[in-house]
Image 1 (cartoon, rainbow, N blue to C red):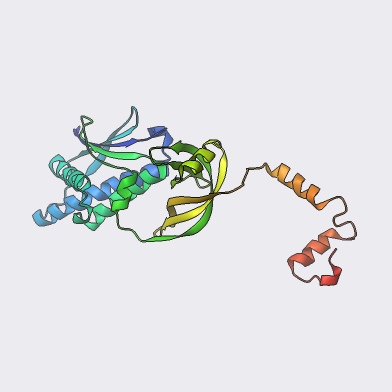
Image 2 (cartoon, rainbow, N blue to C red):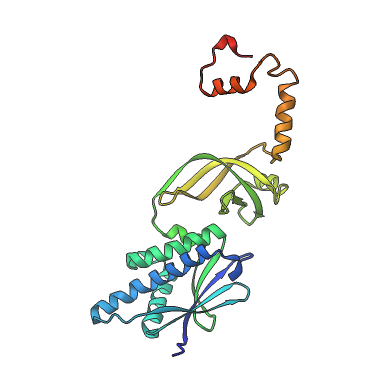
Length: 266
């Protein structure tokens, strides 16, 4: 039986299409949607002693975003759950939702923050009911840790009414950093280059992912090819370095084992 679509999940953001989302992330997204919807439906099914609910993926389409169309054998229950979630998002009443639904939405919000994206709950017609974006993450109560640190990342965006710097970190995640206008102007000259920033960070203690960063200082850091780095180290050491050591391999082994006597060092 061909089931009609009940709702859509639209993932909107720069460069985000179905083929640009890794399979692992897609599985996490689909699981999060299923958990968020199913938790609400199960509450009603428990009261009616009915366990026949099924939520399925009907289609994936590529438009200006990645669109995932969902269907169900109980469209009335699925639609009611989506409307409940949408109302909670619009009215900022997420704590009224059951824990499983909150957890599913939190994971969607976590993905939105990491990718600089927006996750829309929409009708099959495409009409948006509610969205999850970077600001939504603040609404979720999650244990946070904070402190001063240094981060390195590739600059992909600078600007905004309130100056912000967006970086891609080494692990592929993205973070939006708050900055002063002068700092933003300075980093803007390094667009698509790797920069080092020192400042105040906040981490999610559930997975220790970086959630926020406030720039205090722009480090004097320029990314250097490894071959050039070794060349500069050799030049800094000079041609006479280690010249009076007979067995360099043995000397390094002893240094590693901390068995070198101070008076025997070159």
